[in-house]
Amino acid sequence: MPPVGLYALYGAGFHRPHLRGGTVHDWPLNVFSVQDSSDQLPILRAIATSDLHNLVFQADFRIIPAVMSPPSRPT
Image (cartoon, rainbow, N blue to C red):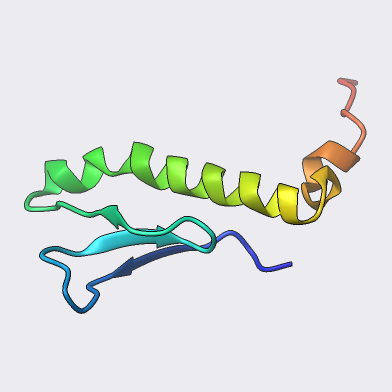
């Protein structure tokens, strides 16, 4: 199973760079300032979440370690 991936690329024929996940492709990347880069965080989270969702469907939910670990109890 491949890991969740986040990539930035400037593909041939693109007018601007794009973000990409391992299984989720080509989200426009418009960064012209520091604030623009901060504004990309929700998009990076959405790509990672979408990638994880697709990987679960390729395998099953047990690829997520937190699902298989029992909850810790406070002492």
